[in-house]
Length: 507
Image (cartoon, rainbow, N blue to C red; front, side, top):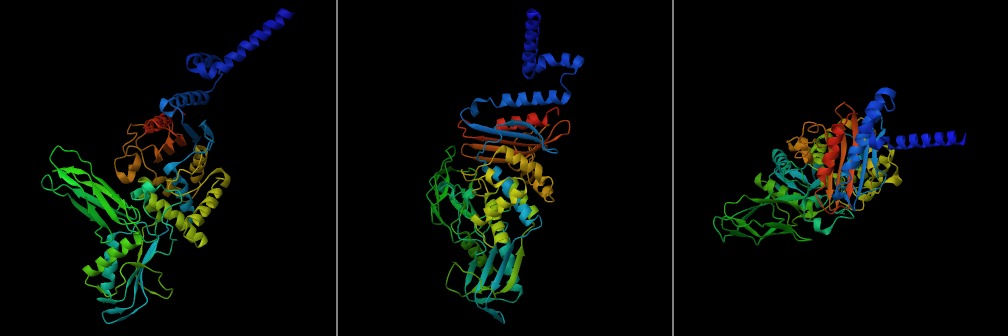
């Protein structure tokens, strides 16, 4: 009797071991067993295979010593398909823009437009406008030099030939804090860290606000100074050209940077004869002064003289000022194309301040982040699960989990603004910059090209990728990959490998 009981116990133990071993040995042993006993259904089979593949990818040596959070959900049901440290809060880099972008669409709406105005306190007598003129910015991130030319033309069409007064820049729609609280000082002169102002200008239709394009071309022969040009042309920036033209075959070592607290742009290094030009999008000091200077030049080209002697100054337009000209931006859903596709930091921070201005009457990071937190809570993201320090993800103190990001991605589909949100995400492998964006040179294979729609993110030691992908069986997935504290790079191939596995998944 004891022998029979012992035999049953051993058999039971063996069965338990076999069951425990199934997930590991499944690919070798289960197909035959499943055919006869239906021990595991096909969906479980696919799920185990997918998990194993992802587990193997995450053993890459480049990830050792770092932290990687991965969350994959069924985008329709929200059901978790795969999780690896998905509840650990990590630095999101530009994946923060998913939170900012969703919140701003929810608060402002896809049809929201920003306004820029030309106003005056004076009266027109004949061809003379007697009084000061104010260029009033209200957060338009798409203002171009061509818009200022149109303003000048509108004043000319009103018969104005002389302004007996001063030109002022009114950027009071937002506060005077130009930098988010954790921006690195070394990023100040770079376009990714440009100052945030309610009155700002972009040099082209990438809409990198608060910047000028500095272009350096070689001289005709070695020893000559290279030529340096600015777009748009402005007297607010001073070029200090310390570069040198060298002979053919020489090294191109051009560096361009702006001194802190000034608009002195230093150009150094060498550029070979007949070499291609070097270009840099350089952030300016006090963007509103740049806008005013370009507007003043536009007025002069239209033959409108300004007699005021105060130069480029900021001032708040009186409430009773008369509006002479107005420009409305493209709607927010169109702004989101360059914003998200090209990962525009300036747009993200302006959206934060705009949310604060609209909801709390205060265009500040403090007010805007409060609105953002409240709005995200309404989208299923509890306030105590994230730490929001800016809108762009430049801060190394932002904290979000991959689980939080997939929660947002799933929930966003229920909102009326979701089509604008989805369309703004970069599409893998699509060459057009305003389609593929930051993913245009990644995942060009058949299974992923045009299929992976996701936001990239990158700051020192951080790389992230979060978005949507459809499996080969047509299942829509929401995923988030957050790699933190890596030293050996690049790690984007790891992200691409995970996204590819999902695209080719048999689920």
